[in-house]
Image (cartoon, rainbow, N blue to C red; front, side):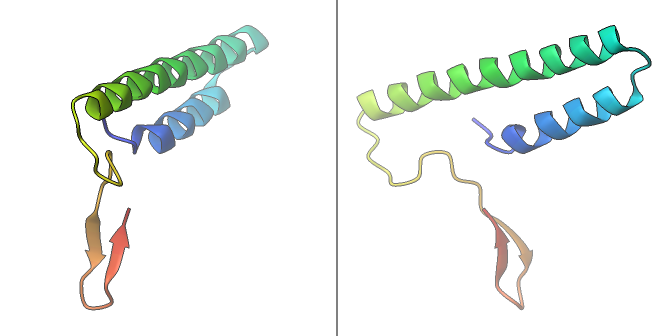
Amino acid sequence: MNLNLFIIIPLLTSLLVLVTQNKNQVRLSALFGSLIQLIISIGLLVFYLNERSNGNNAFMLFETDIVWFKNWNIHYH
């Protein structure tokens, strides 16, 4: 599971709220974004419990490590 979705989804939801026209559209946009985050959270819990029950004892299960600036040893975790 990609944990970056927990950063991207709220940002997209806030952008969607900013471009909506009336109060009902704002409410539906916020509800839609919140429900997506809830579904992703439940999926993350299921994946976590599944990995632990299969014997994966890694310290960080869903880690992302991307090198941004190699010379300065700066990574995105």
